[in-house]
Length: 266
Image 1 (spheres, rainbow, N blue to C red):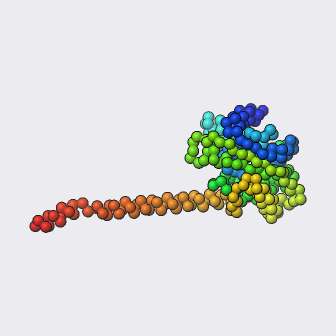
Image 2 (cartoon, helix red, strand yellow):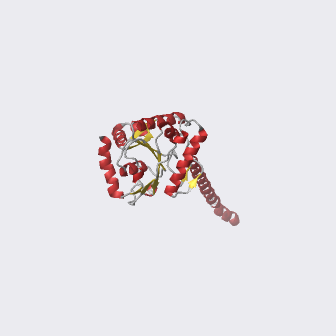
Image 3 (cartoon, rainbow, N blue to C red):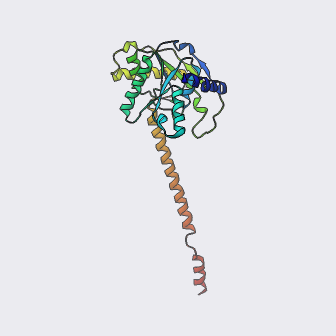
């Protein structure tokens, strides 16, 4: 009931203001469980996709969104619950993975849609990164649910980092045909099968989105970018310090001219 109210208010507002275009809606089954595996460009991905679907889709979100104190914290928790997101405690990588899988299985066992981002985090630069072979293949093989590849397009351009006011533009959503992995049923613990399933899904997402593919994890790319930014800032600080020292050296002997004049007068 709450989801329906939030979808009517938030979803309708998003469609009215941003007018997202959609291709492949016919690939979403009218009933039964399915996994929507999407690229991840923006925080808003988890809102635009549900907004254009008739069926409820559930994503997972970090537990901090649901446990923050105060009025703002309670409103945030209510909002995320209302738009169909489940809290997952991400303290401890292994524990977080198991919690996410369990949450996903509960959604799929109810015959509903479960949304997942195989990259594990938002893309730092708009490119598509290597999928993590954990939650997605294990969910698909344990549940037997089809995997539907989804491509979010241009959502990162609506509100880039540091921009407060969203840009009014039309994002896109392209939904691919369901992928059947029943041939691997019962092999969800095999890491080679996990990688094979993940790579097949990521290939379809790449084909749908047209993104450049980078064969490293997005988390590693973010670390590289952060390290590069840190090194650049340190280099800039050193240059500024050297320039400052140079200026002080040039004019750093006050009174020397007067001393020379005094010696010449003597």
